[in-house]
Image (tube, rainbow, N blue to C red):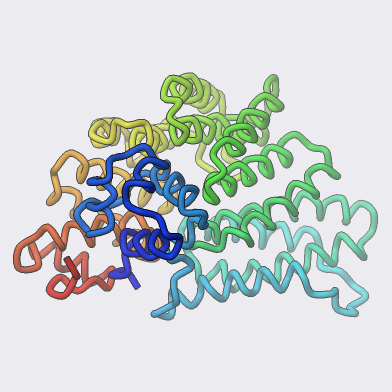
Length: 398
């Protein structure tokens, strides 16, 4: 699976469409030589914007180029597949005939456990709890008292946004979009600022993952504007995150000057937040993590390690955020030609959240490239990283 790299898929789709390398290069805005290097395994694709542009030029989806969702090859990866399947069924299946819907307080406790598990990249707990939670909340909204059904709307937003965040990065984009849309419908009925902010953020994230950069930026901008003037932490959290996502979306569109004001707004909002009711970690440390990722899209990947050094990693509570920092730092170090350090960052991320690392196209692309560029399989650390990613350091095709 990982050895079937993005460059090979690009070449196959290009040949199938009858395009020359020059025609693809012209459509994307790069040289023919650069396209050739991508296809022949000499240059990895590490920028979202380039991947999106290539997919658009070839007339295919992002997943057609990344190969996601990957076939599960371990029990942990099967859990992710089972999570997606279970949540899909929970959205589609009719309610059972039980006359007594679940207690809203019990569902709220489960929803909190789901939020904790997602930030811990604990897919076993997510697979165990999320499908049943979505089904039980749907039944509560349909058969509970008016007050309970109203509580169910807020719980449904929490459950479906967490589910969308959990499955989208593993290639289940259509399901993630559906979950975000379901969250938005519930939030609109509830008409609470915080829930609408959560659903809007989920919609914006899913749009960017699917390659809809302009839509992603518009949704994030609208969400941030709608939350201007809020003063409670539940709503402020999503205002700050909307600005962070707007900065990332602007960078993906090449609007580098637009990213900085959004980052500044997010940082100012984070300074006002004193609690974390959604477990999203809107803190100055997390803003720093986003700044690293935005630098990778902003045409300044070499600055990513500099920004990473400014992040107080001890202030990042969730495994999800710490692993993201290590991954993006590794990507920046690779761009700066510091491959040994990049390998160590990826290994640190893998120790924290192996399934977050081993199913990320960006990581697989870079590990494969480093193996191809290395002699005799590379360093001990690179060989270890390659093995964890199921890339044979002695058999990776050139």
